[in-house]
Image (cartoon, rainbow, N blue to C red; front, side, top):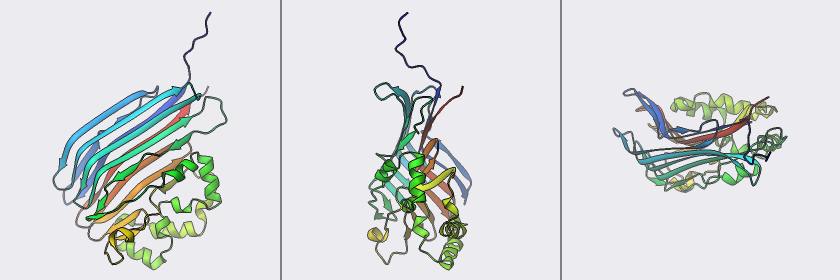
Length: 293
C-alpha cells in the first residue's frame, strides 16, 4: 500500500484578529463590538473579515478595517504555521489619535508533535502610517527586530534574567520617575491606577522570578515623545505610554509574551477625564498546541 503523502497531526491551530473594539462608560454608555473580527478554526485554513465606513458620533471612525487569519502545515520546513493580521485605514479616535493606517501582524511557527523545540513568534510587519497625536506627527519605528531576536519564550526569559530586555517592558518608561511623581500621575489619570506599586515592585526585583506565565511588553518603549511634540508640550510621554491632559492615556504597540502564544494590540486609548472608556485598535494573537495523547 502506498504511503499517504498528506501530513496528519493532532496540532490545534489558534489565531484571531480584530480591527477596533471598545467600551464607553461616560458621558453615555456604549459597547463597541469587535469590528472585522475573525478567528481561525482549530484545524487551520483561512478566515477573513472586512468592515467599511464605521462612525460612532465624534468618538470613533475609520474608513476600513480588515483582518485575516490562516493556519497550515509547511512541508518544506516541517512546521505548523499560522498568522493573524489586522489593518485599519483612516482611523480617528476623538480627533486626538489619528492614523492613515495601523497594521498589526503576528506570525507563529510551531514544531512537529513530540519535538523538544519551542514555538517561535514574530510581529515583523506591524507598523503605523502617519500616526498623529493631538495633531503632532509621531513617527515611531517599532522594535519588531528585538522581538524577532527573542522569538521564543525561553529566549525572552533568559534575556529578562540577564536584564537585556528591561526596555521592552510596558512600564519601562516610568521606571525613572520617583514615587511622588508616579502618585501624581495616578491622581491625574485613573487609567494609571496602581502603576506606582507595580514600578516599585519591578525595581525591587520582584518580577525576575523564573517561570513567569507571561510578560507585558511593548514594541514602542524607546519612544521619546519630546522629539515629536517639543520639550514644552503639555503632552507627556513615558516610552509607549502617552498622557494627554483632560483626555486620558494612550498605549502603543502592546505585546504579551506567553509560553504558547503572543498577543499584539497596536493602540489602547483609555479616556479618563471629560469622558470615560477604553478603545482597542489593531489586535491580533496567535499560537498553537499539540494535543496528547
